[in-house]
Length: 153
Image (cartoon, rainbow, N blue to C red):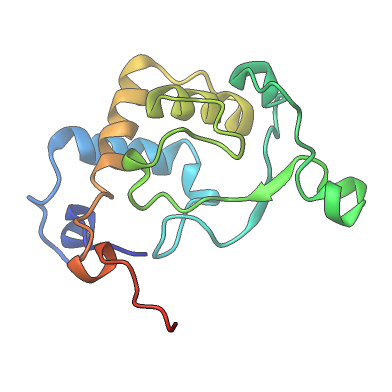
């Protein structure tokens, strides 16, 4: 579900829709390479990618079980640790993070992604800025989506 957010207003030309910190976060998000996978209308959700390109994900997530991703279904070696890239719309409202819910904080999830996907040790400032940008992707949930559907008997 795409909920209209301040980021959408920014994309439509309202340069004041984002704070300076959120704009720095967007810039960092682009510059460090997050947009290679997290792109499009949903800011992700368009592709599959190995989780742990640079280092094993479980080294930082503390995952109790190591999930081999799509490999469990396809049995193809190239699908080991491959998962669907999640969309980042409303990500600030959807902890815990990663396929196994192993990380509670968005800040930690961003830092881990820098390490295991990009091989970058993001600074505390970069993490704060990226998280601020990610929070700008949060929009109000439409009233109709809050109501349970009426199902046939």
